[in-house]
Image 1 (cartoon, rainbow, N blue to C red):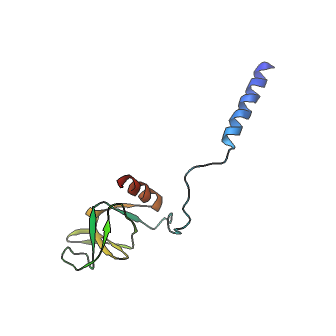
Image 2 (cartoon, one colour):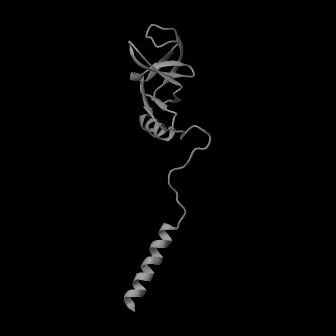
Image 3 (cartoon, rainbow, N blue to C red):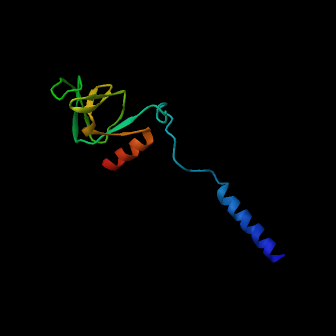
Length: 114
């Protein structure tokens, strides 16, 4: 009888731990595309990077970004200069960014770069 009481108490104890509210990974609902399966996110790894108008190093500069910026990838193109990613402000080469499948992973990497 003591063994059964011990196992019941142990089971209740384990159940109380597993039934507590899960405080796992917080979900950022401010960005609806954060977990979309066909959307990629990039983290800028250069201290400063220049957006280009086209996929070419000699193309006009259309803007700038900084290390640890998280950007939504809008396109990708392979050129003679390598792989380039399109963003709202222009194009960046793959040597300037790390690309991830979801915003949470990109943001975690960006936080580590700061």
